[in-house]
Structure formats: C-alpha cells, structure tokens
Image (cartoon, rainbow, N blue to C red; front, side):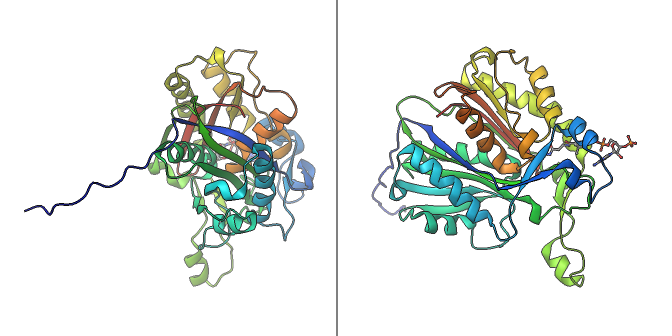
Length: 337
Ligand code: UT7
C-alpha cells in the first residue's frame, strides 16, 4: 500500500528571461601570425586565407581562467546593475581550467562575492556559452535562480601544442560573461541543441592525464583536431541548426539585427551566411580576425565588441550558435542587452 505523503511545494520562476548585460576580457598580449609561424610551417597569407585570423590574444603565464573570468564578470555585473549577492548560479563554460576538481566556478564565485550562488562548470567546448544561456533561461523560468551569471572562458594556450600545424594558429585566450535575469518578455528563444558523440574523436586530447602519468610524463596532452571533418560538419549541419533556431523563435532571418556565430573560422561563418540566406543588412560577428578562436568565450567576446562599437543595437534580435568538441552544438535567438 502506498504511504500517504504531502504534496511538495512547487518552485515558481519568472515568466521569461533575458540577457541583461555582457562584459568581456581580452588578454593584453597581441600575437601576430608571423609569431605563430616561428613554430609551425605556415604563413601569414595561408592563415588569413584559410581562417580569417590576422592576430589573436594570449594570456600571460600567471593569468588564469579564473582571473580572466572575474575581470569579464565584474564588467557584466556593473553594466547589469545586479549585485553579486543577487546571483543564484554561476555557470562557467570552459574546457581549459587545469584542475579536475573543484570547478573553477567556485573560485570565481568566491572572488566575485556571489555569496548566495550555486556554482558549476559546463564542459561543452565551443557550444558552452550557448548551453549556459539555455540552462540559465530554464533555471530562471523554473525558479531555481533569479539571476544567473554565465561565463565563457578559455586559456587554450595551455592545452594547444604551439608546434601543431593543425591547431596552433587557430586557438587563443579570453573571457566573456553575461548576466541573465527575469523578464516579462521572452528574451531568449527556444534552444536547438544536441550532441553527436560518434564524432567525439574529431576534436579531442592527444592522451588522457592518466596515460600521461603512466607513460612517464614525457609528452603533455594537447588538443588535436581533424580540421576538415569538423569544417564539413559545421558547414553542413550547423547551417541547418541555425535555420531551425530562427524557425523555432518564430522569426525570419530578415528580423535579425545580428548574427553572432562561434568564431571558429571565417570561412565557416561565410558558408553559414550563404546557407541561411542571411540578408546583407544583418551585421555579422567577425571578431575572429583579431581574437582568434577562443572556444566558449568567442560569442560573448564578439557580442560585447559589437555592442560597444555600436555595430549592433541594444534590444535587437541576435542569432547565436556555438559548436565544437563532442561534437556538440546549441543555437538560439536572443534579444541583445
Ligand atoms: O572551434 C571548434 C570547432 N573547430 C572548427 O570549427 C575548425 C574547423 N576546421 C577548420 O577551420 C579548418 O579545417 C582549418 C583552418 C583547421 C584548416 O583549414 P583547411 O582548409 O581545412 O586545411 P586542410 O587541412 O584541408 O589543408 C589544406 C592544405 C594541405 O596541403 P595540401 O595537401 O593541399 O598540399 C595542408 O597540408 O593546407 C596545408 N596546411 C597548412 N598549410 C600552411 C594545413 N595546415 C597548414 C598550416 N599552414 N597551418
């Protein structure tokens, strides 16, 4: 016989959520293609043509994932006018925090003084920021947090082999943050997301840390990428995902005020523009040219730059799409802060 039990209280959230503000942090050191080519057999011309990258930023040796995150988050909190104590969750999308545990989100939360927040990391590579936006949206609507701090941050230079021709010129360092809070109007459209784990070897590590230890610790694990495979998948599948996010939001590409894809490769961005028939009047993020590919940080870095430069309007609709190692992806239309 079933035991009689009281009904549990239902948590209630806000009708909707929106991005209230973004902030970002770019490390000071600018690294040119010429400098990267000191360690790989390549050229400035090839890198510009194949990736669109002219230069990128590298963090200092003693500058950590947490340091960059705190800097970006402080800007976002100030702009949002939200106090640290109001944050209910700190979500940090990163794959380059060098400790297995604890999550870097806990250090960031402590340093920001978000005393009432839960904190955790998201491992969704270059889709991490869009995963975080989706989770924050659901948490705020579900009532588990009123304000969520979503950070995308990477120090890829710690994990990329500077002598690897397939990755050294692409990846770089930086951080972007968004404060997401309650709203009457829908500020974050439906997220189209997924994971194709059958392609998990396409972007991975050369070996595990356990193998590194047991093999005598000679060659440190580094990021390895089947560039062409990822490129083909991104152009083919991510264009469809972008279109599905537009459709799910109940808008058309003509309604967009910005297209901010993960800054993976300028040619991937251009192919997606053609595939979704993006009207010429819609500004497109091309932050990769001077920032490189910063994985989880690339979308908030690009969004912040475009907003600060007045290239895109506060209150306009922006299509975001992140994709990368897993292979994982997520896309949504948002109202720009
Ligand atoms: O952010 C996470 C998701 N990541 C991505 O979305 C990255 C997707 N992939 C890419 O962006 C591109 O595949 C790369 C930019 C990484 C590479 O560009 P690609 O056009 O796919 O180059 P490829 O591997 O097809 O190589 C083309 C040629 C080859 O020479 P041959 O066989 O045509 O003579 C390579 O040996 O370019 C050569 N090559 C290089 N040459 C100069 C490969 N790497 C380099 C290099 N410098 N660094």
